[in-house]
Length: 238
Image 1: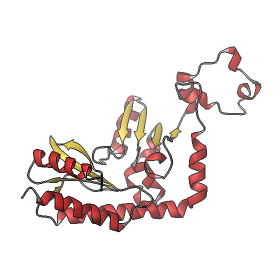
Image 2: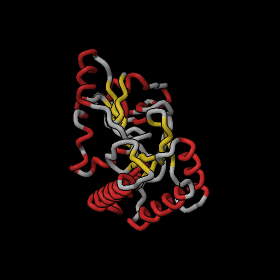
Image 3: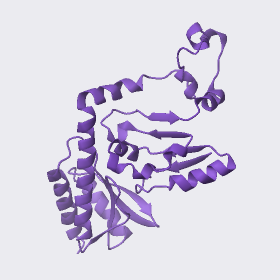
Image 4: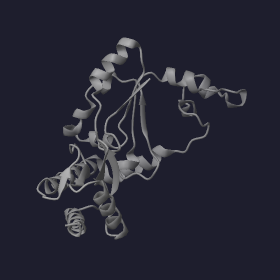
C-alpha cells in the first residue's frame, strides 16, 4: 500500500497524485490518499487542483472536524472497491448474522473498521450541512484562505520574518530570521500571552512557526491583531 498525502500536517505540502497513482497501477499497489484537513477545501471548485489524479486512487479520506465546523471526531472515507476492505476486516460470528445483512439489503459498516461498535458520526456532519448549507461553508473556506494569504503577504513584506513554505490554503509557515533559538522563545512568549496560539514544526531542519486559520468566527481583525502581537514580541529581540 502507498499512502499519498494531500496537505501534510507540517506545511500543507501535496504529493503528486497522478504520477504516484501511475506507479501504483503498474505494480498492483493499493493507493490511499489522505487529505485530512485540505480535503475540506475541495468543496470549492477552484481549490480542487490538488486532488488531480484522485480518481485513480483506491481509497480516500478527509476530516470534517478539522475545517468544516464538525465536532471531533468525524472522517469521510471513500473506497473504490469495498469488497477488498470487507474481506480484510469482516468477522461474522453466528450471533451477528441477520436476514438484512445476508441479503445485502444493508451495508454493515462494522466491517469497514477494526472495532465492532461505532458511533453515528455522520449525524453531526449532517446537522452542520443542514444548518450552514453548502454555499455558506464554501464562503467560510474562501474567507479563511484569503485571510491566510493576507497574513502571508505581511510576512513577506517584513524585514524580520520569512515564509518557510509555499502558502496553498489556510496554513502559513513562517519564521524569524534570527534562527531557531529566537523562534522557540518567540513561540513561548506568544502562546503564554493568552492572546493567540501558534504551533511549530521542523522544515529542512529549521524551527518554523505555524499560523492556521480555520475557525468559524475568525475575522480580519483577529488576524491583524495576531500579526501585531507577533511583531511586538519579535521587537524585543532587536
